[in-house]
Amino acid sequence: MSVLAHRKLVEVGENREPMSAAELRGKSGHEVGVHALRSVIAERAGWPSAAYGQQRYLDFEESFANKVGAVYWGEAALAGPEYRYLIAGFAYGLDSHDPRDARDCYEIIWRIIALDTRKDGKLNIAKAQNDAYIQDNRMFRGTPFNIPGLIMSKDLSYKRGDEVVNPVINMIKTQKDIDLLLAGKLDPTLADHLSIAESIVPGTNLARRIREHFGLAA
Image (cartoon, rainbow, N blue to C red; front, side, top):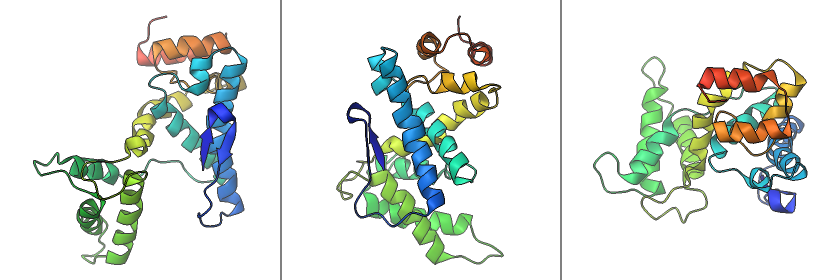
C-alpha cells in the first residue's frame, strides 16, 4: 500500500495476499492516519512544501507511521534487524568487493541470518532463507534485481527514524502534542521543520521539550 499525497489516493497492489482485519487496521493507521493525514493538514494550513514532504522529512515520518500503525494492529513497532544495512553494504561493495545484485546479496544474507538465529547449535535454514528473501526483496524492490549496486534504500529510513521518533513519542503528554506531530510531512526534530509545525499547531509544550532534548535554537 502507498499514499499518493498529490492525488489524495491510497493505492493497494493487485497481487498482494489477503490481509487480516488487524493488519488492515494497522495499514490504514500507517498510510491514512499518518502519510495522508499529515499531507492534508499541511495543505489546509497553506504549507504546500510540508503537504508533499519537506526536505529530510522521510526518516521521521516512516518510523512514526510504523508506530501509529502498530497501535491499530496491536503489535510493537520495531524496525527490523540490521540485515538491511548489511544488504545495502554488500550491494554497494563496501566490503572491498565489486557491487552485488539481489541474488548475490541473498546468498550471503541467508547464511548470516542462519548463523545469527541458531539455537543449541542447530540452524533453521528454511526460516533463514525466507527471512533473507523478504528483506532482500524489499531492499531491491523497484529495481530489475539483476543490476549490481542498485537498491531501494527507503527501507533504511524506518531504522534511522527510530533514533529520533522514540524519544519524541516519550515526550507526548496531550492530544495537542499529537496534533503537532501530524502537522505536515515534517521531522519536528529539525529546527526549520519544527517552526513550520508550530505555525500550524501553535502553543504546545512538546515543541519546547523537543528543542531542549535535541538542542534546537528557539
